[in-house]
Length: 112
Length: 116
Image 1: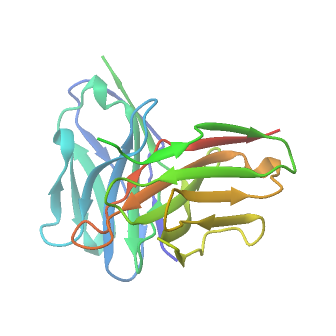
Image 2 (image 1 turned 90 degrees about the horizontal axis):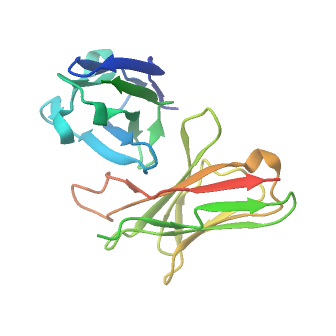
């Protein structure tokens, strides 16, 4: 069975700081990888995805993620966060089917 | 720009009653997924449906839970004889039926079920 681990449950940063959220998955086959974001009071939105090809993928709002197959990781990064990035971030994976397996989420708070 | 619609947004049921949660997928999407988020837990897959077919129900509890996606109308997640442990947020997602975006799932706002 596949699983996803997000190591940081709560992260607090100041505006303009750099962000990296860790995500590791366990699955032996080909995977599709996703980051979703949930802003306060809103529903889950797709931030970026990796299916194949270039392991460095760019998403909306300046976010990017790097797929490192040897480490089973798909970490999310942003060079300079803004107050509006305050949200909960979920890493997810599909492998051998189309059902998403989610991590438990990371609550990011950006302070002015 | 009609996204995935879910209703009701909040549902309160007493123990033993039935809960019906509805989901209308995005326009053009023919695949629907249901996920459940229990308090302090991440989202967990429940069931994956196409029109008139259940494709994968490996995450559905064996009893009291059922789902359908009829030819016409929304997908329905039905919980019979609810118990307090069913209190959770239930999210629906939809995707295209084929193509490069087949694996992209778009989520609705969720239905928060409270069992008293």
